[in-house]
Amino acid sequence: MKTTASVQNWAIGTTPDVLENIHQKDINIAVYERDLTEFEAEIEHLLEQNIELKLSGDAATIHEELKKAIDPNTSPQITQDILDLVDLFKGISGSEKIRLLLATINVNMCRKFHTDVNDIRMLCTYSGPGTLWLTEDNINRNGLGTPEGNASIVIDEGKIQQAKTGAAILLKGAIYPKEGTKAVVHRSPTIEESGERRLLLRVDTGKFRYF
Image (tube, rainbow, N blue to C red; front, side, top):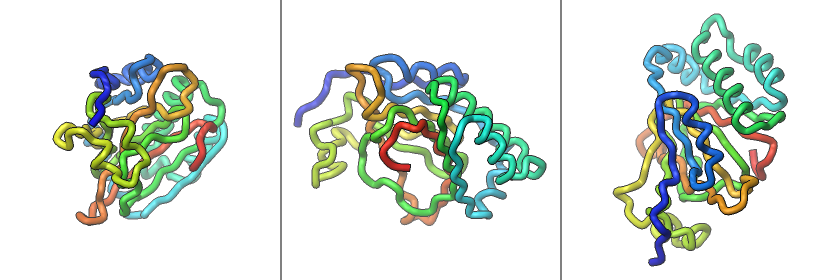
Protein backbone atom coordinates (compact mmCIF):
# COMPACT_ATOMS: atom_id res chain seq x y z
CA MET A 1 0.00 0.00 0.00
CA LYS A 2 1.37 3.40 -0.98
CA THR A 3 1.95 5.81 1.91
CA THR A 4 2.60 9.51 2.01
CA ALA A 5 5.62 11.25 3.46
CA SER A 6 5.42 12.02 7.15
CA VAL A 7 4.19 15.61 7.47
CA GLN A 8 2.61 17.12 10.58
CA ASN A 9 -0.76 18.27 9.30
CA TRP A 10 -2.24 19.39 12.62
CA ALA A 11 -2.02 22.18 15.19
CA ILE A 12 -3.42 21.64 18.69
CA GLY A 13 -3.53 24.13 21.55
CA THR A 14 -5.55 25.49 24.44
CA THR A 15 -5.89 29.09 23.24
CA PRO A 16 -8.00 30.31 20.31
CA ASP A 17 -5.03 31.64 18.35
CA VAL A 18 -4.06 28.03 17.53
CA LEU A 19 -6.88 28.05 14.96
CA GLU A 20 -5.02 30.63 12.86
CA ASN A 21 -2.57 27.88 11.94
CA ILE A 22 -5.16 26.49 9.52
CA HIS A 23 -3.75 28.86 6.88
CA GLN A 24 -0.32 27.25 7.01
CA LYS A 25 0.37 25.18 3.90
CA ASP A 26 0.85 21.79 5.58
CA ILE A 27 -1.81 22.24 8.29
CA ASN A 28 -5.28 20.96 7.43
CA ILE A 29 -6.77 20.65 10.92
CA ALA A 30 -6.45 23.03 13.86
CA VAL A 31 -7.82 22.07 17.27
CA TYR A 32 -8.65 24.48 20.08
CA GLU A 33 -9.10 22.28 23.16
CA ARG A 34 -11.44 23.65 25.83
CA ASP A 35 -12.98 22.65 29.15
CA LEU A 36 -16.75 23.21 29.01
CA THR A 37 -17.61 21.61 32.33
CA GLU A 38 -19.45 24.74 33.47
CA PHE A 39 -21.75 24.43 30.44
CA GLU A 40 -23.02 20.96 31.35
CA ALA A 41 -26.51 21.96 32.53
CA GLU A 42 -27.13 24.17 29.50
CA ILE A 43 -25.82 21.53 27.11
CA GLU A 44 -28.10 18.90 28.63
CA HIS A 45 -31.04 21.28 28.30
CA LEU A 46 -30.40 21.66 24.56
CA LEU A 47 -29.93 17.91 24.13
CA GLU A 48 -33.34 17.31 25.68
CA GLN A 49 -34.91 19.71 23.17
CA ASN A 50 -33.59 17.68 20.21
CA ILE A 51 -32.64 20.97 18.64
CA GLU A 52 -32.03 21.41 14.91
CA LEU A 53 -31.21 25.02 14.13
CA LYS A 54 -30.02 26.25 10.72
CA LEU A 55 -29.03 29.87 10.21
CA SER A 56 -27.35 31.75 7.38
CA GLY A 57 -26.27 35.30 6.67
CA ASP A 58 -23.58 37.68 7.83
CA ALA A 59 -22.23 37.49 11.38
CA ALA A 60 -24.60 40.19 12.64
CA THR A 61 -27.61 38.28 11.29
CA ILE A 62 -26.38 35.06 12.87
CA HIS A 63 -26.06 36.87 16.21
CA GLU A 64 -29.61 38.20 16.03
CA GLU A 65 -31.21 34.95 14.89
CA LEU A 66 -29.32 32.83 17.40
CA LYS A 67 -30.53 34.98 20.29
CA LYS A 68 -34.10 34.49 19.06
CA ALA A 69 -33.71 30.73 18.72
CA ILE A 70 -31.86 30.10 22.00
CA ASP A 71 -32.99 32.09 25.00
CA PRO A 72 -29.83 33.77 26.32
CA ASN A 73 -31.50 34.03 29.72
CA THR A 74 -31.78 30.25 30.13
CA SER A 75 -28.63 29.33 28.17
CA PRO A 76 -26.35 32.36 28.54
CA GLN A 77 -22.99 30.60 28.51
CA ILE A 78 -23.49 28.37 25.51
CA THR A 79 -25.20 31.16 23.57
CA GLN A 80 -22.24 33.45 24.14
CA ASP A 81 -19.81 30.67 23.33
CA ILE A 82 -21.47 30.04 19.96
CA LEU A 83 -21.44 33.76 19.18
CA ASP A 84 -17.75 33.92 20.08
CA LEU A 85 -16.99 30.94 17.81
CA VAL A 86 -18.92 32.54 14.94
CA ASP A 87 -16.85 35.71 15.31
CA LEU A 88 -13.65 33.69 15.55
CA PHE A 89 -14.59 31.74 12.43
CA LYS A 90 -15.42 34.93 10.51
CA GLY A 91 -12.10 36.49 11.44
CA ILE A 92 -10.05 33.47 10.40
CA SER A 93 -12.00 32.49 7.28
CA GLY A 94 -12.57 36.05 6.08
CA SER A 95 -16.03 35.00 4.90
CA GLU A 96 -18.86 37.54 4.97
CA LYS A 97 -21.49 34.83 4.53
CA ILE A 98 -21.80 32.18 7.22
CA ARG A 99 -23.99 29.11 7.58
CA LEU A 100 -24.57 27.58 10.98
CA LEU A 101 -26.04 24.29 12.11
CA LEU A 102 -26.68 23.44 15.77
CA ALA A 103 -28.27 20.04 16.16
CA THR A 104 -28.78 17.05 18.39
CA ILE A 105 -27.38 14.07 16.47
CA ASN A 106 -28.34 10.46 17.21
CA VAL A 107 -27.37 8.80 13.92
CA ASN A 108 -24.09 7.95 12.20
CA MET A 109 -23.54 10.93 9.90
CA CYS A 110 -20.45 9.90 7.89
CA ARG A 111 -19.15 6.36 8.40
CA LYS A 112 -16.39 6.66 5.80
CA PHE A 113 -13.26 8.73 6.03
CA HIS A 114 -13.51 11.49 3.44
CA THR A 115 -12.63 15.07 2.55
CA ASP A 116 -15.19 17.87 2.37
CA VAL A 117 -15.89 19.88 -0.77
CA ASN A 118 -15.54 23.28 0.90
CA ASP A 119 -12.79 25.66 1.94
CA ILE A 120 -12.92 25.84 5.75
CA ARG A 121 -15.40 24.37 8.24
CA MET A 122 -15.61 24.71 12.00
CA LEU A 123 -16.98 21.92 14.19
CA CYS A 124 -17.58 21.80 17.92
CA THR A 125 -19.06 18.75 19.61
CA TYR A 126 -20.54 20.17 22.80
CA SER A 127 -21.68 16.74 23.97
CA GLY A 128 -20.78 13.23 22.87
CA PRO A 129 -17.75 11.87 20.99
CA GLY A 130 -15.78 14.22 18.75
CA THR A 131 -14.76 14.05 15.11
CA LEU A 132 -12.27 11.38 14.01
CA TRP A 133 -9.36 12.47 11.80
CA LEU A 134 -6.14 11.15 10.32
CA THR A 135 -2.56 12.31 10.48
CA GLU A 136 -1.00 12.61 7.03
CA ASP A 137 1.31 9.63 7.58
CA ASN A 138 -1.71 7.43 8.32
CA ILE A 139 -3.56 8.04 5.04
CA ASN A 140 -3.63 6.21 1.74
CA ARG A 141 -5.28 8.96 -0.29
CA ASN A 142 -5.66 6.62 -3.26
CA GLY A 143 -8.28 4.80 -1.21
CA LEU A 144 -10.59 7.79 -0.88
CA GLY A 145 -13.89 7.21 -2.64
CA THR A 146 -13.19 3.54 -3.39
CA PRO A 147 -15.65 0.71 -2.58
CA GLU A 148 -13.25 -0.67 0.03
CA GLY A 149 -13.79 2.45 2.14
CA ASN A 150 -11.98 2.88 5.44
CA ALA A 151 -9.97 -0.32 5.13
CA SER A 152 -8.19 1.08 2.07
CA ILE A 153 -7.75 4.60 3.50
CA VAL A 154 -6.48 4.06 7.05
CA ILE A 155 -2.99 2.59 7.30
CA ASP A 156 -3.07 1.95 11.07
CA GLU A 157 -6.44 1.98 12.87
CA GLY A 158 -4.64 2.31 16.19
CA LYS A 159 -3.42 5.76 15.19
CA ILE A 160 -6.81 7.29 14.33
CA GLN A 161 -7.13 10.65 16.10
CA GLN A 162 -10.25 12.03 17.79
CA ALA A 163 -11.11 15.58 18.77
CA LYS A 164 -12.01 15.98 22.43
CA THR A 165 -15.53 16.89 23.46
CA GLY A 166 -15.82 20.67 23.61
CA ALA A 167 -12.92 21.33 21.25
CA ALA A 168 -13.45 23.84 18.46
CA ILE A 169 -11.78 22.52 15.32
CA LEU A 170 -11.14 23.99 11.89
CA LEU A 171 -11.05 21.60 8.94
CA LYS A 172 -9.49 22.49 5.62
CA GLY A 173 -11.55 21.28 2.65
CA ALA A 174 -10.80 20.34 -0.94
CA ILE A 175 -11.43 23.80 -2.39
CA TYR A 176 -9.29 25.72 0.07
CA PRO A 177 -7.82 28.46 -2.16
CA LYS A 178 -4.10 27.90 -1.72
CA GLU A 179 -2.05 25.78 -4.10
CA GLY A 180 -0.41 22.67 -2.72
CA THR A 181 -2.62 22.17 0.33
CA LYS A 182 -4.43 18.94 1.14
CA ALA A 183 -7.88 18.59 2.66
CA VAL A 184 -8.08 16.87 6.02
CA VAL A 185 -9.36 13.27 5.99
CA HIS A 186 -11.97 12.74 8.69
CA ARG A 187 -15.29 11.14 9.60
CA SER A 188 -18.03 11.31 12.19
CA PRO A 189 -17.94 8.92 15.18
CA THR A 190 -20.38 6.00 15.17
CA ILE A 191 -23.05 6.51 17.81
CA GLU A 192 -26.16 4.60 16.70
CA GLU A 193 -24.83 1.31 18.04
CA SER A 194 -24.22 2.75 21.51
CA GLY A 195 -27.32 4.95 21.66
CA GLU A 196 -25.19 8.04 22.30
CA ARG A 197 -26.21 11.53 21.25
CA ARG A 198 -24.11 14.47 20.15
CA LEU A 199 -24.77 18.18 20.36
CA LEU A 200 -22.94 19.44 17.30
CA LEU A 201 -22.16 22.94 16.08
CA ARG A 202 -21.11 23.31 12.45
CA VAL A 203 -20.09 26.61 10.90
CA ASP A 204 -19.37 27.02 7.19
CA THR A 205 -18.47 29.74 4.73
CA GLY A 206 -20.55 30.19 1.59
CA LYS A 207 -18.16 28.00 -0.40
CA PHE A 208 -19.25 24.39 -0.22
CA ARG A 209 -21.29 21.88 -2.18
CA TYR A 210 -23.68 20.64 0.47
CA PHE A 211 -25.18 22.13 3.66
